[in-house]
Every structure is written in structure tokens, then in C-alpha cells.
Length: 415
Image 1 (cartoon, rainbow, N blue to C red):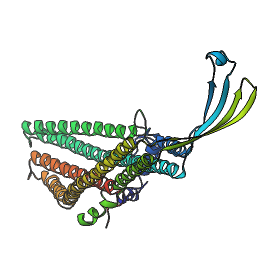
Image 2 (cartoon, rainbow, N blue to C red):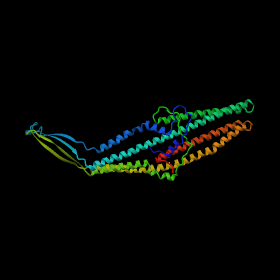
Image 3 (spheres, rainbow, N blue to C red):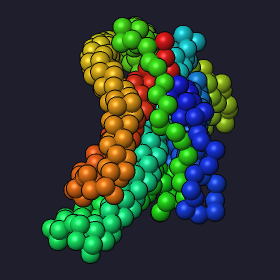
Image 4 (cartoon, rainbow, N blue to C red):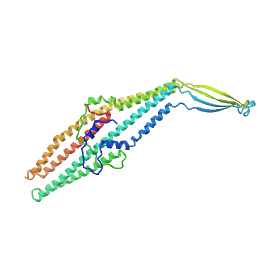
């Protein structure tokens, strides 16, 4: 498995402990990938793919099978040939002569096909690992969002209780109490929503290794560390050497070997030898029979097969070029999203959260002196919760986008 800097940094930045929902050890990204590797049906096909490749190679290298024939001559005729009086029986063994260059061409076709299918399997494996990493990121982000939602619900409940006490002391109006109660109810619903989003994310991740339900308590990673990424011009230059392009090249080589085999088949016929024993009924004697045969080449069929293989190769090469154009555009869009996610994360961390925190602290400090209205506290709390959510979502978007970029490159995206 090609490790990427995004995945490595996710593991390296893991915090030492998190509040656990169960006594089991928290799940790391390495644990999740190992479970997917062991449990996903698609990845369990690796042995079958290896056996299939070996079978193709053995089939291509196998010599033509021998044929046994029994011929009856001079029987059931008239006169001297009446009945079996002059019967001649020949038992014969024959087989096509398998020339070394034709056998080598068959072996080359099998080897090229096996290479292309191995690269396709590895590409599916990388796609599955990338999907597992993205789902892991979503679980970590959902955990952080749930913590923020619970903090917001707790603060909203405390605000509602404080406003109720102020109303009893004739400091707050009944409308303020109702507004605070509505805000507390909304915060509680948001917390419940965040909880079921986390459960869904955990279930989606566990399904990749075949678990019927989430079999881990928490996912352990720190998404706030955003690794640097190389410039788009640096990354796009690497796309020509990716495994995806190597697969198209392998497919083209496979079609080239098929064309070569078809041309050799069209240029040469098939020689056969035969040998056996003949028994003559009239004299009760045996004789040795030796024969050579030659099947003329079918040039029309061979040329058609070669033309088909050549057209398949040209189509494959065109598809590879089209895929490269598409992946370039995708890489550019992802690189732009990555930059936006970093700006959004850093702005939330450095500006929005500190400002909202200071705003809420000032309101709480000045409420005793009656300088702030209860709705000011609700507004500040809402702003702080929104800023925390924005940072969490931006961090998750950054890492998920980085996983997609490094999946396209099949390599780290750092400079």
C-alpha cells in the first residue's frame, strides 16, 4: 500500500486520550485500514487473482494436446472387400507442432493481460483505502461536532436557567425566558442530530470490513494539523507516472501482444505429425504408419484478429489520454478546494473562535451589572458554536480533499 502524507500525519498527530464510549482501545486510521484489508470481500480476492494469473500463464505455455484416432479401411465393400476380409485397421497418434515463437507469443499475451489486471486490482484497492480514510475522517469530525453540540446545549441550558432566575428577580422579562427556553431546546435538538450523524458515520466505516454494526468506540486522530501541499504545477507534473496511467499502458501492451500473435498465426499455418500402427486382416501383419500434415494459414481471419487488437489498443491509448485530461481538471479543482479549506480553518481558529469567545466572556462578565440582555448571550453562544463547527468542517474537508489528491497521485502530495 502506498502511504500518503495525509494518512501518515493523521496518525502521527493522534492525541494521547479521548473520552471513550467503551473500554476498548480507540480506533486509529492504521487499525481501520487493517480491518478493511482483512474484511472487505474485494480485497480477499487477491489470492484468486494470483491463481487466475498463474492459470492463464500455464494455459498459454501448454503444448497442443495429442489426438488418438482409429481408422477402418477396406471394410463392408463388395467382392474381395466384402465384410472384414480385407480390413486394414490403423491406430494413430497425432499432434500439432507447436513452434517456439508462437508459444512465446501466447505467453506474452497472457503476461501482458495479467499485468494489466493486477494494476486494475491494485487501483481498486487504493480506491477502497481512500474511501476508508475519508469515512474515518468523517467519524473523527462527527465526534468533534458532537462535543461542540453538547457544549452548546449545556451552555444554552445554563443560559435558560439564568434567565429564569433573572425573571424571578424581575430583571428579565417573560419574553426573554421564552426565547432562552427555545434556544435551549434548539441546542438540544442539534446535539441529538450530531449524535445520530456520528452513529451513521461509525456504521458506514465499520461496513467496509463487513461488520453489521460499529464495533469500535471512538476514532483517534487530530484533524487540526493541516500538512502543507505542493503547488498545483508540481503535482500535475506527476500525473503521467501514476499507476492509473501505467494501467492504460499495460492494457495497450496487452493489445499489442494480441496483434503480434494474430499476425504470426496469419503468416504461418499449422503443421501436424502423426504416427501409429496398421494391421492388415488378410495377412495378419502389422506396419508402422508415419504422416505429416499442414493446415494452410487463414490470412483473412488472422488479419481481422490483428486489426481488432490494433483498434482496441488505439482506443485504450485514447481513453488513457482522456483520463489524464479529466484527472488534471479534477486535481486543479481539488487543489483549489484544499486552499479554501485551509483559509476557512485558519480564519475560524485565529479570528472567529477567539472573537466569539471574547464576546461571550464579556457578556457573562457584564450580565451581573445589567449591561447585557439575555438575548446577547444567546447570540454570542450561537456565534461561538458556529465558529467551532466551521473549523471542524474545514479541517475535515481539508483532510478528505488531501486523501483524494493523494489517491489521484498514488503518492504523497507534499513538495
